[in-house]
Length: 259
Image (cartoon, rainbow, N blue to C red; front, side):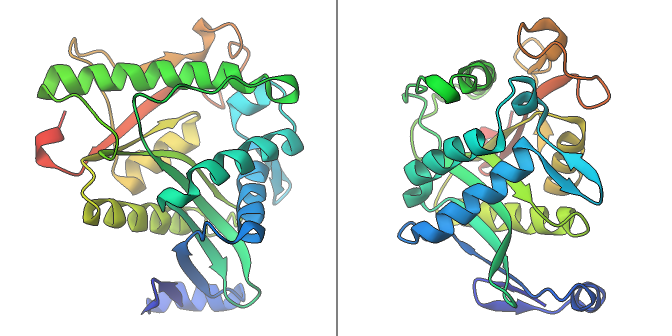
């Protein structure tokens, strides 16, 4: 059984599967006052991005791996990020009600184009390289939206889906899809115009396009907004079987912002 905002969803085949795994899913907005829960949510994301072993296979985000960020260092970054944005009400978690364990997290933010990207030092210095690449993609998105719609994006108009992580390999697609759907419904209610994210590997790009129904973004010249890793200094050694590029994905929530 899945519980979303206290509403029970009974889907026969899924329920039988969840019962076999001894899981009862519950989804909710992350409470900005519950630091213990924020700590656990950050750990879930850090494990997923910096490296976690599921069924003897190590799963990691290629850009994080390329700059040699450890799980502990990335966990520090994620925790600080979530503490900074969680009060915006755009971070969501999936828990197993039977043991209260977090098994999925979606961390988003209210995108403010006027915000300056923080500069990281010491053990988090490698994050600067990742943020620079992502910032370049985001700027190209803003320019494309402006050229195609004549609208300049402001704060409180776009949701930036920054990180999503699921600990359960067998339920990965289902939980990720539910988390994104909850966020999308919430964003529509709150009057957001669109949502976007950066896909850093082949698996996430497939998941986003097939299950989240987000689309690639093409600029005003018809060129795909992406960055080839082989053309960068720090990410050129990412194995092509893992990923060849970082792509921008977008979904308009208001027809006026279709691009």
